[in-house]
Image (tube, rainbow, N blue to C red; front, side, top):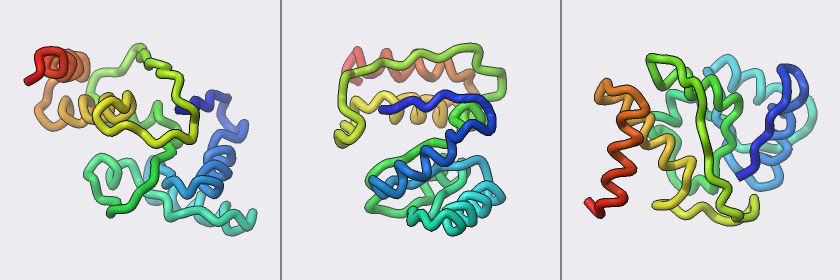
Length: 142
């Protein structure tokens, strides 16, 4: 997984657009206004990308089949939208896979984080508790 960390207005979204065009991965963005903005920007720059989807579509699984991968634009906004209390820090494991390697469904760290946060939102627990439960289930084989 590639992390793109830059200040506001320094090209994060355009970099994701280029990655989307190169790999035909779908961008996940904050809302429909952002979908429309990115779709227009891609058209203006003559960049062919798949239709971006909103955070809500992503979280609800409303994106169809055959998706090769996701590019999350402004992941910090997505994390803030999922939880009630603010997330003060996150850690991620760099498993050494190259950027173009296909994700491993059960072990994909981003998938696990997303699943835990979705579970936390749906059942009303804080994200840390849900993450601990997911980790305990995986360790215990349940």
